[in-house]
Length: 164
Image 1 (cartoon, rainbow, N blue to C red):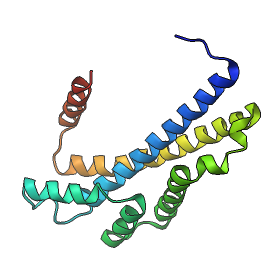
Image 2 (tube, rainbow, N blue to C red):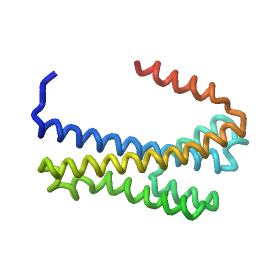
Image 3 (tube, rainbow, N blue to C red):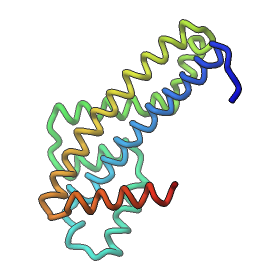
Image 4 (tube, helix red, strand yellow):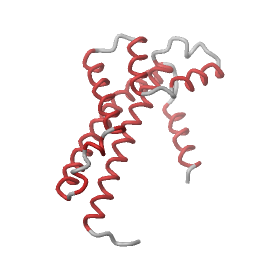
């Protein structure tokens, strides 16, 4: 593998950290999709498999803003969570649509990239914590309706096996 000069290595690290932040932001979107499609959707469990797939297809194609709006229609979202979800929507959209434009000057310098790496690490941790909170909600729901953890683990193992 080719050895990179320090600037090139730092640029690579900056883009890698950006990728990790977007991964964590997408995890939040998926967790919201699960909550909207099933956990807080009274029609999900009584529906047959085909209808559940339709519901999932519809919900999983929504933007983060649409998901937050839909969740608010389904339940009374606690004020602190509602504020956090709105903040997450804004952060995710800023990252996806404006981040590199706003940071155009910083990415050109070593000091600017170091600042970006710190910022991206903070954002990654923020989205990861939000996702963990949302995940805990649907995991409790899954347990309540009788979905066993070993079935979930088997599904994860299958995903890994298919991609090895």
